[in-house]
Length: 80
Image (tube, rainbow, N blue to C red; front, side):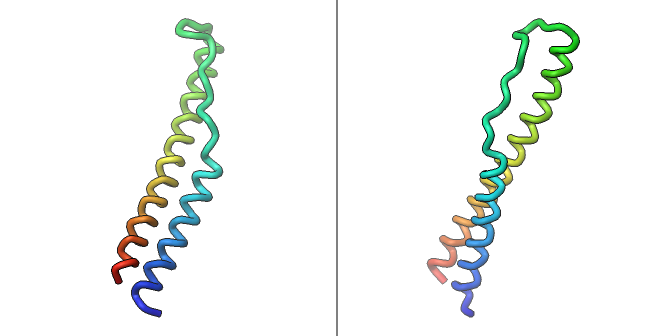
């Protein structure tokens, strides 16, 4: 295999991984409840929602970074 084939294969693998991560983390962010002022239970629930939303955002960023890496490697493979 040539360097171009290896780079293309690596780009395909990174793209697949990024697509799978984005597929499983592509849920819309969950809204907060209770407006600005809520009871203790609402505030506790909003903290849990904030943690879940932060996790979703992190996975979305990771998946997008994999896809961008895949595009970059593919661009290099075109010129090899």
